[in-house]
Structures are given as structure tokens and as C-alpha cells.
Image (cartoon, rainbow, N blue to C red; front, side, top):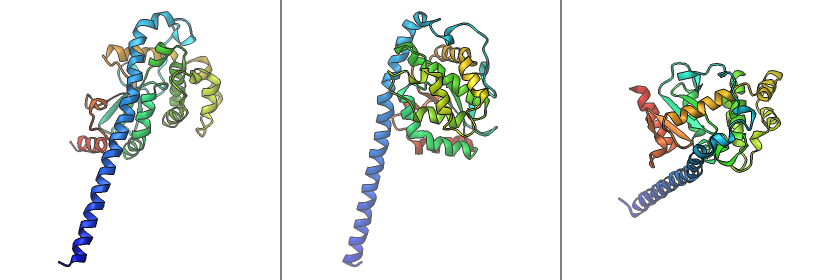
Length: 257
């Protein structure tokens, strides 16, 4: 083998090694982003337990009323909003709060992969909406954003509006999403969503009591942070090796099984 060929192969190996290190560093940054943000939302749920009674009745969503599940909701007590094709397997279960920064971090990292898998019919995602941050910091942004997302589900626009809410998430301590006019304005970013029916649903709080029921179900299930993301009953957020690529492999393997 000539010296030139040996140098060429050595250079190729070095480039490959550099790319591998870049990939490892990228995966580490993504995990750090999610784990770091998750701490805030864990603390939020701890505070909820102590103050939820004090907040009960202070906003429209806390008053008793009929539980109206959004169109197409599934699962026990119709508390899950499904995204994906009927019959797709496996199912990823996500408990989330639209004010939670860790939930946005999860979306930032995993959204392209989830869209790809659900569009291909390889995965279904069941979203459970909760109001964890409201109980910790006050306000009603978690609750009202979840209600508006359920209204979007009624219109067949849940995934699109879900993504818009996270793309426009304010700082955790700022209750911008507690304003119905803001939620309606954001609906304008989703083609065909800002209709009289959607506006009425948001302003009347049609699904507020349903959101509260979903929130209670999270505690009853023993989960204490958002996002809680379950695949095959296991919380993938506790797996420090998890990445979008690894999740994709797990989903495709489960689908083949």
C-alpha cells in the first residue's frame, strides 16, 4: 500500500472519529437540555399538592361543572388525545403541561422524530394535558392552554396548535397563556382553526373541567413530573442514553414485534 493511500485512510478514520464525537456531544447536550428543565417541573408538582386547595375556585376552570371530553379523546375516562393513524403501534404516552419548560425542551428535541413516526403509521402518541405549573406559580396558563388545545382537537387541529403553543411558550413565571385572547391569536397561526366555534370553546372553557380531571389522573397514576413519557410502560425520560435516534429504533423494533 502506498504512503498516499495510507494517509488517505488515516484521514478518513480521523474524520469519522470527529463525527462520532460530535454526535456524542450533541446527544449529551440534548439530554442535558431536557433533564435540566425537568427539575423545574418536578418542583412544580411538589408545590401543587400543598396549594391546590387554596387555588380551587379562584378561576373559572376550578369550579365544578360537566366533564366534556374533546372529540376523539380515547383511553380511560377519555382523557387521552391521540395523534397518529388508527391501529398504529406502539403507543407513546405523554403527560405534559404547556407552561412547563421541560416539556418544551422535550418538544424541541423529539418533535421531528415523533412527527416522522406518526406520519409513517409507526407510532401513536397519546397526550394527557395537566395544569401542574398553575398550582406552583399561580395563574391559569396551563389550564387554559390545555382547554384551548382540546378545542383545537374538536376542530381536528390538535397537533398543529399543540406545536404552536410550545413554539410560543412564555417564561414559566409569566402567565401569558392564561389569556384567552392570546390563545385565540395563536390559533391564527394554524390554518382554519380560528373559527367562531373555536373562539366560543376557548372563551366558555368547554373543556376546563376535563383538564382538571386529567390533572388528577396524573397524580393518581403516581407520576410526579412533566414531561412523563412512557413507551411500553417505561418512562424514557429516566433513560440517560435516550435520544431521538434511540427512540426511533425502539419504536420500530416494538412495531416489528
